[in-house]
Image (cartoon, rainbow, N blue to C red; front, side, top):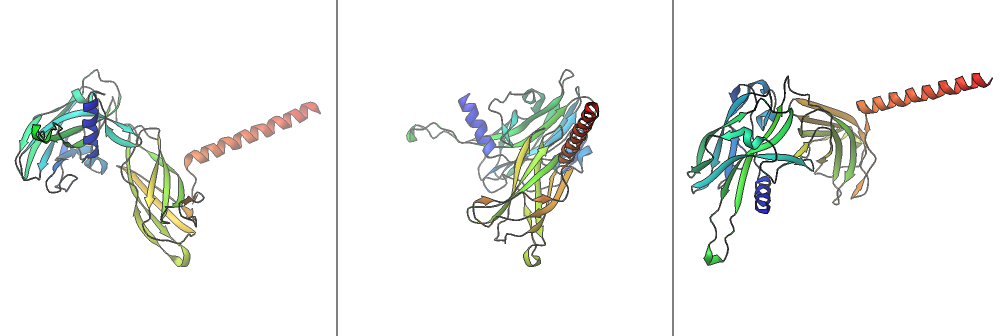
Length: 339
């Protein structure tokens, strides 16, 4: 178990991730991807779900909703950009969301995806500077329970043991993978949504400005967040941006996560008008407001004053107002009874 844990940790550290879906597929255009540097192992999907052609996230991962009793297939390819042949193992395995990150499970069989997903060639020898097309088949049994599963199709290559001369038999494991976000159940795809609840301005230890947004997943499927932030109407009419939001944040249904935006340039404290746009696939959300960065390094300022309160704050405010009205009515009734 310890060896398998280290193996999947190594694969997770080197994850290069790409896509597909659950209806009929359409071909994806050629694209550069992680793991395509010289002398490395790469993997990418060659087609995506036709009913998610407008979903940028579905072009990066296998994201789909499938009914029980359904079987689909997706083509993908392995890339060997090294100058030597590579013996590569390809296999499905479970994954999970830990600490707002998508990581391979220590136990490859932690969920059903390891048995639902098969690869036509689980072992290949990739010649130098080659691309090898493969096919993955996903078969959902009639008895499958509803819910979203996380996993991946992993490609792994091991170096030869160092041998007795070096006194070591350790193998170095390198791997890449295609993430899978697969929801199973009757009917249509469960809703995906999120809200941006707050923006907190601060400064790093070097004095550079940063903003930390708190995001809440209000839908029923996992999200992968990306986006940009702009500043305007600053001192002397300054404008800045766009600045990229932190990547790599995966949010499970019902959970909260901080999403940071590093403004890698010196900026005055403000006040500034701020606009933050985040997205996960088809879901796009934007908040605007006013913020002021703290004057000192390694500190946080006051939360931004947002132009429109998040829906949950409106609901909470309405509930408080209703309680206040009820309390007032009870007091008046008591007074009438006493009189």
